[in-house]
Length: 374
Image (cartoon, rainbow, N blue to C red; front, top):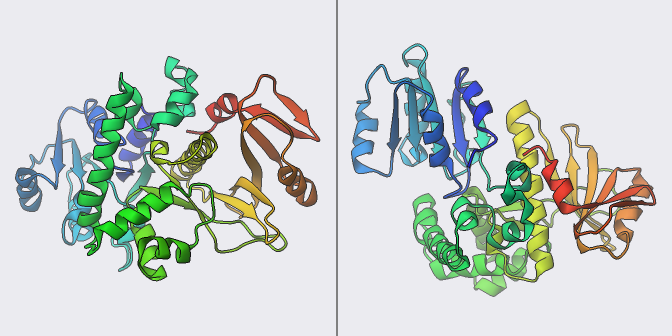
């Protein structure tokens, strides 16, 4: 399955190092190897492999290697200084691709010795936009139920997808989180994960989360930070500029894997729309150097719109409300659109006929999501 970002990554490799990051098992290694086929020589080195680790530490790859691929290199002590040295002394024309399953910003606390030497591309699960033009894009229910991670989405049987997800969750808690940071209470981390799976689409209270897991609110926040750093969940913060009496702190939490959501069809669909919008936003940022963001709006009177797209100037480009079926124009969407003169759209999963109500388009999920950037 071809990934849309491949051509841009190849272009960026001609200029700088490229960091390819994203969730575990989202297809980073597959894409890196697919890119490597277009070079005369390459070396794929995974820091989790003992043999590869020795090669990396001793810099024993052939000097004429055209493409160097380092996987999970952030687990190496002083990896940034190592990469800086490799990049600054590499052979003319040599390309460097670095992949990993943790957010780069979590490693920038002590300054960034790699400044100006790399581009970032965030690889996320399949979306309707990326699948556009294939038969797989026609089955939105499959994408919502299984999520867009390649293995469960492409599995021939639902049971295979379910078995993958069970192993995936176990691996996240017992391997990825342990590698990332020492956690004394795995039960509590599991409880936090379970709580979030049941709370998709609602503003998260760290006090309630702490009570549910039997930990302090600060520890609960720290655990969510870790889950976000490892591309397991992402937070959508409230937008408050120009919005009277808007909330400023209570973020909503969604999963990169829609299949992890525990809830009704509405919660899974909202998560699916969220990750699709985020993928498009990050894709634009990574490709064009923009600073767009995905936010939501909620006031103290509990008027809420699911999502808003915010541009580099922190201005709202569009309000987006997700609905399973068409009944009426959402009154809160109408309120915010009219009061603040904002572009808005209601995205409906099951819609027989698209229409415009009070100047606001009511559009089907397939047509809307397939037109996103990624």
